Amino acid sequence: MTNATIPNLTAFDEAALDKAFAALEAQARDDAAGVDTEGFRLKWLGRKQGLLNEVSDRWLKAAPPQARKAVGQRFKVLKELVESLLEGGSGAGPSDAELKAEAIDITLPGTRRLTGAEHPITRTMSEIVSVFAALGYSVGVGPEVETDYYNFESMNFPPNHPARDTQDTLVVAGQERRPLRDRLLLRTHTSPVQMRTMEQQPPPVRIVIPGKVHRNDAADATHSPIFHQVEGLCVDTSITFSDLKGTLDHAMKALFGSAVKTRFYPSFFPFTEPSADVQISCIFCGGKGCRKCKQSGWIELLGCGMVDPAVFAFAALKQPAYDPKKISGFAFGMGVERIAMMKYGISEIGSLFAGDMRFLNQFA
Image 1 (tube, rainbow, N blue to C red):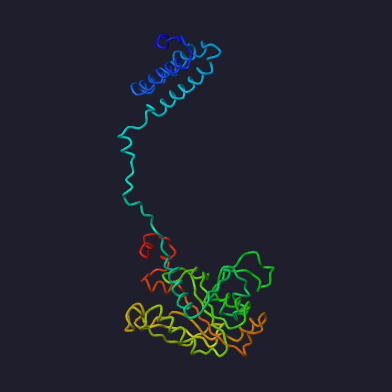
Image 2 (image 1 turned 30 degrees about the horizontal axis):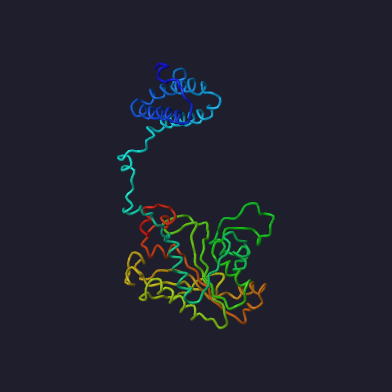
């Protein structure tokens, strides 16, 4: 490269400057298309013999004072063009082949985003709640961290009652100085919401209570320390055990089909008297006997009973309308996982909590 590459300017009017700089811009585009990147950089931006340095020395510095502004503006445009050519190619815009390669066919279908689906526990819980909602029941909710009073004492589990052992749970640490009834724990059933509801509103009450509960149970194929329940409470005047049987018989038929039969047999729960366990005819064999029902033709599904007057007595402390002599009611509770496992043929309760997408995709 020699100094003759950049000729001296003899005129500095607008027309002469436009012509001179247009020629340099054309040369820069040709060089960017014809030489490698490093060669182009050295030719135009070299520190000693780069063409831009020559333009600066021969045109910008040599320009008369009145023309320096016009030369400087054009020089700046030329320098920006050279730098852009060095970074991005010829600067002449993408070729037709490049444009065609980048084109998007707007007539093609878009990428379909996968839609989520309800977890089988959530779906089963919603089905159960909807059955009772159709009967006029509202939904009650309450905290998962409860006091001993609401979880046990108000449900007729007095301190040291042996029935507490079957509902051993996790207790919040550092509460030894508190009275027993005020100590916090993870609720073992959704029954505390029954008491909270009765304290807040007088009868009549008809609620179902879905939610997560915790018990100190060893995990196996059918047990988990975390599970879900749906409990129900109906309180009014003249509520009888016949009302309870009719309600649950209707609910089981709505969940498992009109051919399902129910039967009740005596049991014990501290918060109901009399109490009963409810069995349904086996939905797998139609009551004939199979491995699922242990050849009995029946499957135990839930517990229920008439609300114990002692529970109403606790509610009456804040809501006098719950006088055990004037009102009556029934309560029931069922495990959501057990029903989900029956409805969807799931053999291991742990599968519902493992988060395995291969398992969950079956229900999408």
